Length: 221
Image 1 (tube, rainbow, N blue to C red):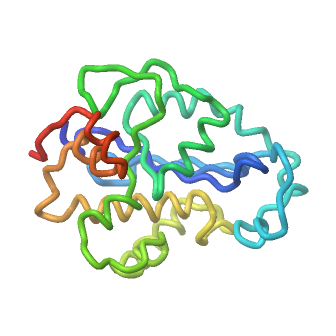
Image 2: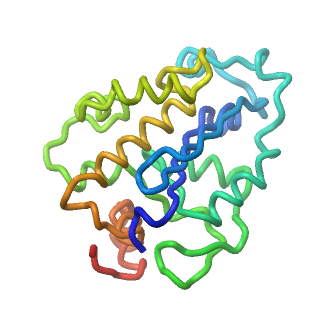
């Protein structure tokens, strides 16, 4: 199961456990190219602090007319059925998603080809892959990795094509999803990783040793 033969859905959420999901961004990579994107604002389910507004620039008043994130069940269920989900530090996205829907439908277990699961994960996680594959990396914040690997011009070009005009910045969901997707693509375009499999990426994205061992062991190539 080569990574290039399977759609990978890179996801970012703005919001937290208190406010709920306020914005989502999804970037689908097919054979390493941005094939589809989706994003929208979502009505808050709880309070939004001033500190949070300063980060993501979304207030309850401007979100009041939006539909709640729960309206997106069919979209996210279909995404999970067609390919693995990905994120930069995936536990945050997984936690927010599971607060809304604890389980997906019965879907392929991309860590164990031929098996099925009702879990949203495991996720491909660039926040785990980069530090495991590159020693002495320094900061692994999304924006710092984008700058380190010279991806900011490509990200800005993609944002001009895909993002709403007022959401072309870090801590905007689609912008961050594009940043993560470009990081993943850059990683998989390296000659030594170009033949990586989806199960291997999922295993390497799992920081817990016991959980990683529980995944079916497969070779890189």
